[in-house]
Image (cartoon, rainbow, N blue to C red; front, top):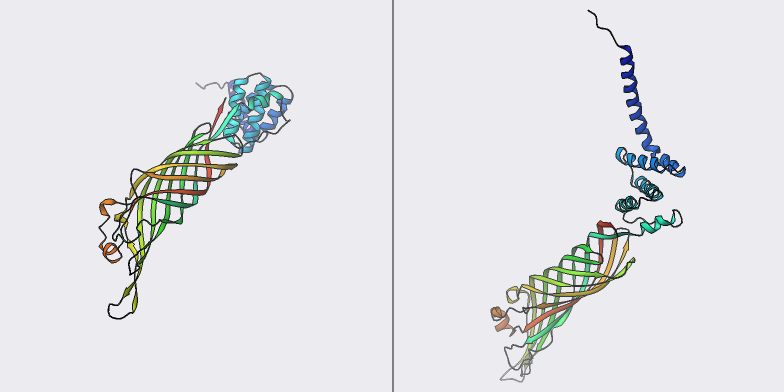
Length: 359
């Protein structure tokens, strides 16, 4: 028995299939014109249709950053015309998530558009950068030691201007407050001249270079909501001294006991490793002030900071007499000294993430 073909159902099936295919094709084509179509609907007062078309466009189409911006702004206007203010707030958040540096042009939108847009609060959340600076150390003598009582072992430690460079990460966890983690390498040093008063008139020139790896953690407070933002910060640091090298020059006069002649003697030694005579692990307090300038996602900052060691002297008192060459050939011995310094730095950072919220 031959089955009967229901042509009516078959025609209906093909009509539906054709509608689905052409409808899908039309939707794909509309990705190019959808925003303009929605804009026409908005101008004609068809706010619901404009909202529906824009939302469908976000679901179905791959939009560029600029196309998303145009669509979001049109969608926000439509929601405001419908007095759906909570939905408009959410759209404004999306506008700034799409482009955190977006600047709203004046006199283009309805008055309440600017009112609700200005309720959105945006701030940098996570940034990272590089830092380079100069440092001026200060060595404060806490206790004087001597090998020869007639020599001036209390002579000043004259600082050598040094430098530091490194990287940092900044997390702005609340409005104008952030926490900064910083790692850098530093170099500094000092010179000493120890003179004697005896007949030999000895003069010892001692210089030392210190190289360290430093980790700092501090809280930073910004002021004002402008492109130029002053700031202050306070925190702590840990120093790992990795290298301490000394150069010595000793000159003195020696009178011959038989003749009236006086001979000049000179003794020198370079690149003496004195690391074991230093407290290599130290910590301290850091404070500073500065100003930053933001353009797009780039922040350029200049600051001055003060660091001071606490808890330990630079000198390792347990190893004060360990270097026999310094002690017996050059008559050199360390004082107890505390280290502090002033840094002046420039930094450049990039903002990777923002926080965008409705007030």
